Amino acid sequence: MIEFIFTLDYEIYGDGTGTLRELVYEPAEQLQTLFRKWNAQFVAFIEVAELEKIETYETDQAIHLVKKQIQDLYRNNHEIALHLHPQWCNARRKQDKWVLDYGEYNLCVLPRKRISEIVDRSLHYLRKVVGQPEFTPLSFRAGNWLFQPTETAASVLAENGIQIDSSVFKGGLQHNHTLDYRRASRNGYYWKFSSDVNQSDARGSWMEVPIYTEMVPLWRVPTTKRMGFARGLGIHGQGFMQKLNRGRDLLRFSYPMKLDFCRMNLRELTAMVHRIIQKDRQDPSSYKPIVAIGHTKDLTDSQTVDDFLAFLRANKITISTFEIAYSQMLSEMSQAPCLSSMRGQRIERDRMCLRNRQSL
Image (tube, rainbow, N blue to C red):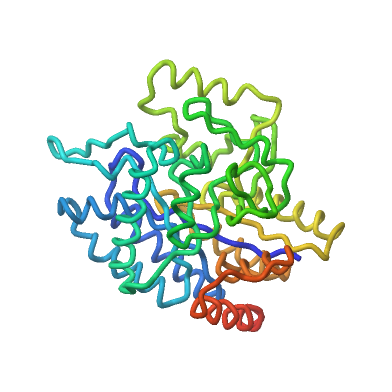
């Protein structure tokens, strides 16, 4: 059984450039409209560190629109999740530009105390924005997908009530940041883990639901649409060694292509899903949460998203969220759900309504 989970990284450019209205608010409004049309929800990974700094320094008046939009997303049953680029936490302004602290680029390599400070501060701000003092997101995505070394950061996040990670993309490799998700390719569509996100561990307290990828020849990655996002390919502004390491990342027979609903064209999206459907027909009884990724800053073609949603409906593929999928994954693993009563009630309510709503 396939369920499709759309995830949206809600953020401006990684170097701090761009406006909230153009790169966050307006694209998210377009998506809200599209998903309302199809009676569906998505997961919004809110990059809270940048929003807090923008509000503190009063650099973008659209922050008030963005905060209200997040509240609307929550009220409309879109899942609000935590996304963190920790280089923003010590950000400051200099000559009308952001100066980010790239010494804190990877949350996972920081001391435990510092990780706790960043997580506590981020959750406090997110609760204020959502307007719910008791709110705790179920899921997390690391900035630039950096969730290695896993153990300390996962432990801190788990202590704060977060139970799902969706940072991994199978086959991922970044020499610049010692990211290596190639061993995760041995795992299924989701898995429990403890000290290493690559390593399935049935006794682990965390669940990994990776961004769906296919390993493809490198020549298949740079489509015309994808090449329009050169700014996001991780090369602009890098030094010689960083570019060299990036070249080493690409020196492989095959390369992971993420299921990216903002960067892929409709032909690519539907072809990838057709292959998923073929796999499901070979094993229809197992649960397959398929995680697609997109970024507000990358949404330039809402018609493709609309057509893709129509394609999923035509193929009777349910659109879900982590909050709804979590109980199904736990059930398949024959473990009791570790949920608060409020979250459990919401999940059961949403799961009962989901299929009826999407059949309209």
